[in-house]
Image (tube, rainbow, N blue to C red):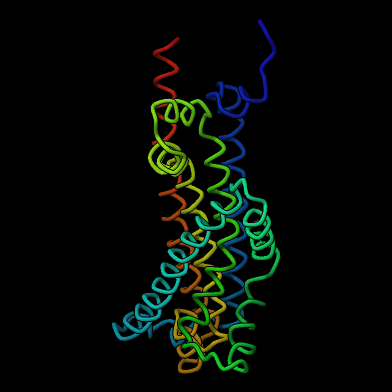
Length: 278
């Protein structure tokens, strides 16, 4: 019997010993998290942060409606930035895959630039530099465009990895049937590549959503801005930020679960075909 490979250890179903070990570590981690949560709650109680005046305003519908308005603004900015980032990433990917060196070099330079420059620096550029050049954008675009540009390079590389993951025989077969290079890419290669990268695109949406928390720089009325208003109105910094953090965690958890489900759905047909072939 041959020794297990790295692929076997990463992708094969764990055995009984591994499952027991995972269960043990899970229990220990839950105990540790529970103990940490107990310490945090006890510290809050000692500092008086559990008093009713810091929490009772969350029983009012007006509070949740106000937070909901900020959440809708955050989701609007994140989704718009994600759509723009996907479009820019696709264009950059196409440029980097060109045989012509000029568009390939330009696309490579832009990708490396967007991946290397922090999102906050791009936001300051749109907020401070562009107005001096006579280009005054609204607060929505001052947060949306920098987040989109920052994510476009990563999405371009994800697209390129998906295209490279498609077997070359697919393109060769399409070309042999008389399809042009353009039709081969859009009708054969890219649909398969898109199936590979959808989980990565959803994961990138999580990063874009987190980047929108920089909206305070441009005074965009997002969830964090509304949270600051509640903090000022009720003098409840810990409780408000804790509730907002839970909201972000739930959204990101839902997106990550969606990404996992799509990834599992994409792998299932491949496993069945391999099993049938065996």
